[in-house]
Length: 104
Image 1: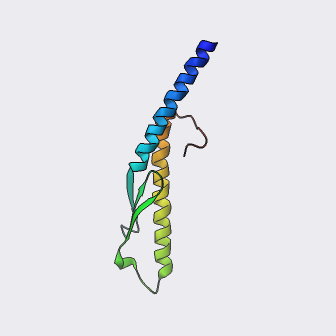
Image 2: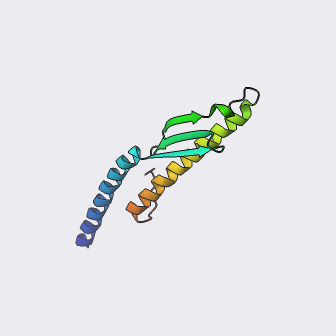
Image 3: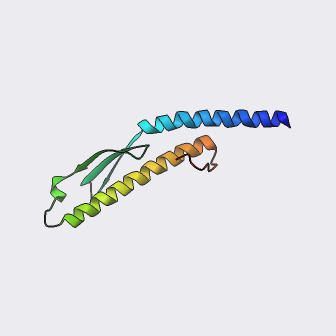
């Protein structure tokens, strides 16, 4: 029984090391998303930090700020979702599909 427990502990430590390495790698991964037919572009990393945001001047209408706000909100939400999906997919490869609370 103790032998099995030691093997399990070793596997857990290896998984923990792989996850730590992957987390560092994910911090440097970047995604670029766009919405509104390319009017809004966002670059985001694996930590869900917005690295850059560009707005095409053609979609800036001082008489219609609401549309611009909606485009930016949609773009940010899309970028965050894609970044979270990237992280979840990468983590599931390390954990074998196990859901481990608190990882990301």
